[in-house]
Image (cartoon, rainbow, N blue to C red; front, top):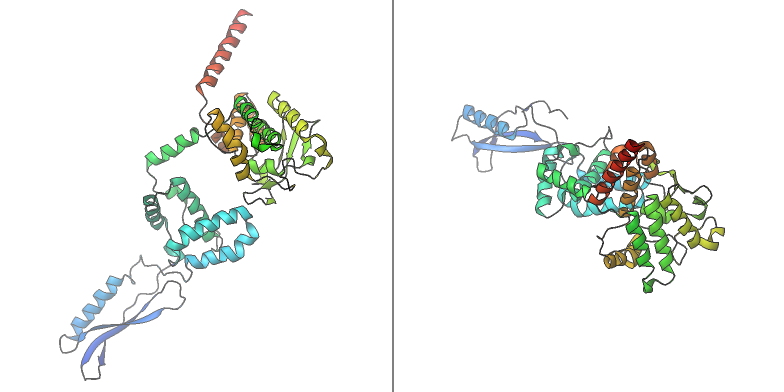
Amino acid sequence: MTRRIGQNPKVRVGERANGEKYFFFQYWVDVPGQEERQRQTEVIGLTSQMTISEAERKRTNFIMGLGINSNEYRIPSSRSFADAERHYREVFAPRMLRGSTLSTAKYHIENHLLPDWKDPPVEHITIETVNEWIWKKRGQGLSWVTIKNILRTMQRVLSCSSKDRKPPFTQQGLAIPEADKLRMKLRKKDATSYSWEQSQQIAKEVRKLEDLDTRRERYAALFVLASASALRCGELFALRMNDLDFKANTIRVEESVDFLGTVGPCKNAAAYRTVLLADTQGMEAMRVLKKFIGKGFQDSNAYVFSSARKTPLRESQMLREALHPALKALGLPQDGMHGFRRGCNRRWELSGMNPAVLRQQMGHTSATMTALYTGEIPLAQVRASFSNKMEKMENEAAA
């Protein structure tokens, strides 16, 4: 917003009850969160102690000190962050966001944003003030990933009520040290990835867990299918019997379950897809899945991996009961279901799958996102790739 017309208040003379006369002037100030300005009175001094010229000089210095006549002065908005948050919570979020997204945003707002940003007007939220805030959060022990997630919520809150629907800052301007940026990239490279062979071991180990009873085969089939199809956890839990085509070896993805257990739309438009399981691993997974389902396939609308109450599985329960105990027994790094998804992405990519097909199979919106899932290829697989290439070259030379 542009500054107001400069103020040049007149020095006036006032008189107190005891007869003393004094110089004073009045000026206007903008108050954050209020539409109307407020008038302030400043007493300069007694008329017996200074001349009118001295009083005017003091008035000019005072106004200059406030900065209200400078070109840099900006009018505080009548809308504070709290106003934007109220619009987000009451109007925007219930209409536009999924329950899980709203739940995460609520945590960010209540624990990090409102305590620090409740009163400042939205025009005062700039990349400079945000950078000051992120270092405060770093001092409290928050990771850069957590801080960036909180800021995404903040951007959504501010943009949903602005005229141009754009946030006042971008994350490209965050003052993250280069060393920390490098560490974040290295952590992405080292993200846990379960190979097909490891997934088979995990399924075998799950079948040994006596406490699971009839749930052992359900979890074993779940992990095998996750490793062969690269489906997201929520997509696996939302699968229904009529999404499976055993003749064509395909799985249709049309729903997803959020972490609150609510069945709803998929993550994005690219997530709606039909995954073809035509390789050796995919066909093995479909065979295991068909054996697990048995006669249950007769109910076409039933969930493939359902709880005892015929509702979708809960991720937290699955991790606690099956995946984490199996990983611990095998000495494998502990992670969630995304480890199977990363492993499948890597296997498909190393097999030479067309990048466009791979992106579609993964349900990604861009090749950049798909590339992030490959991670650092284990040395054993690098050696195998070299061996296969050398063997092929030798065979061609011999022919």
